Length: 405
Image 1: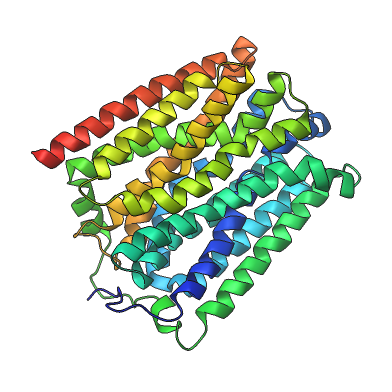
Image 2: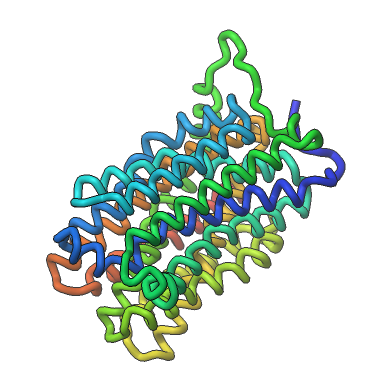
């Protein structure tokens, strides 16, 4: 039986706030290396290609961990699982601050790939349990602003405020982010343990002979889902490639580090507004039209960011912000509303979805770093992302055709 509430529950907004806090720390730590590329590469004697491999390291672990973590989420329940995810994220941040060489930094970032899938799969599971109908789209839009706000904080505060405050010690910044992630986990644990929330954040007991294989087969048997999985790879290649390399790309174009941090936050700020408005509009009759527009915006961003004129560059950043977080939100909303999935298997299904997506999350930063070292610039990487953007438009057309057929 579905656990989705028939009537609104009084504590649902408090639950949403707890999930948002953890997801904010997810975005904060996921983007925390981007504004510190120059300092870390100098202190640890790393190349751009090596840094690209570090940026994609947690996504590689994520790919292997997403499905098991989704299953663990369904078994443990969101109360315990999200606390575990927050602790892993905090450990990853602290490990980055302790790293003395490339292997140690790589290992610390990989730890994030264990906590990440618990958080990213746990958030939509909580939403589908506590919200229904039109409120579900609004809640999805609100929670997805969490990593966006975290990204803004990381990009804007690092050089303008925290580096001067900590006297140029980039390691102290990671210590701060780790402490904040641990606080988020403890806050969620308290909220999820309240009498009115405890039952709906608990796991489901294991049943003899019950396996997750039939859920995977049911999901993968649908052609539309397979197309969505392929599209998710492309979306994450572009979004993770940009989120990790955008400050350095702007510095390469002539900006100083502090100014690049502020400009790199523009897509995230725009994305917050988009996440609060667009998912509510993505009702089934409009969904493919919105997916087409968002894919076109992402393609446009990859083209405009190849220019250095402020006006064109600003337009590209705005388009990127509109598409980057909202596109995945609409795709996830489509996934969790499939009748074969529902809230009971939302954790497992979301884990499968993000496992595929994070293949792109790994390849995006890595390809940008490698292509930079090969061509001494970012143009080749941006051209690759433009080709992927064209592929996304083709994918949406295929989805629309399947829906009509």
